[in-house]
Amino acid sequence: MIANKNPATMQVANVEEFASRSIGHILVSNGRLTHEAAEEIHRMQRENDVLFGETGIAMGLITREDVEFAIARQFEYSVLQKGHSEISEDLVSAYDPFGPKSEAFRELRTHLLLRWFETETKAKTLSIVSAQRGEGRSYVAANLAISFSQLGHKTLLIDTDFRNSKLHDYFGVSNRRGLSSLLQGKGNSSYFLPVTGIRNLSILPAGPMPPNPQELLSQSYFPELLNELSKHFDLLIMDTPAAILYSDATAVSLRSSASLVVVRQGHTKVEQLRRVNASLQSIGGNLLGSVLLDF
Image (cartoon, rainbow, N blue to C red; front, side, top):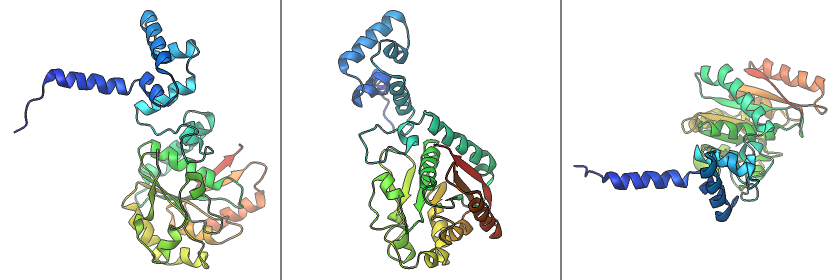
């Protein structure tokens, strides 16, 4: 038998829960606003019957960024505070989810949802490809993974670039074990790490540099591993090696259900882009399109 709860107690609990998620409380608890300033905003808010955020901005005590940060926390939308995380501040989707760069990733996410994600019947694995190093491939993979996780999709970000792995640096995690360990039979799929501060996102680092990267990614165990990981996640996003330098990227794309090519303005050569596209098409890959980075 379930005991009846006291309505008065429930009402107090609901009020306390609401207060703990108010913009003022969130900003104070995250060091963005003092208790005294919050009380001053509340006093002015009551006198003028205006929203807390708009009042604080008008008084010059908080910024629009502070309000957006608090609203994101209210709706449990993952957002990080600069200076309070090991995660690189280059990951704009985590630190500035309402800024113009993050908006570009949300737009890309929307296109993927409409054109591919919702219509894909197989395990959803997306490889991010580029011709050369320095074209923003890891940057796109990481920010896109964060963007999907913020939408509530359980996302695993996998680093398949054994020679020039970068994702562990972005997220401040160890690279002592990871994908290479799993492909060599040293461990199990639990090597993926939940990302602190970002709900629904985990990372599988590249792991120690193996002597035979291309062979590891071409063996039959790789798609078996991806299939096993897909049981735990809605989406796998894989960062790949530079496609012009190594054939590893083709091996990864072959195991993916779709691929995106990253192009950097003023950096990617047209001929190299054609070679990458031709290589992906030759293996029957599902090439969704290209992402142009102009920042």
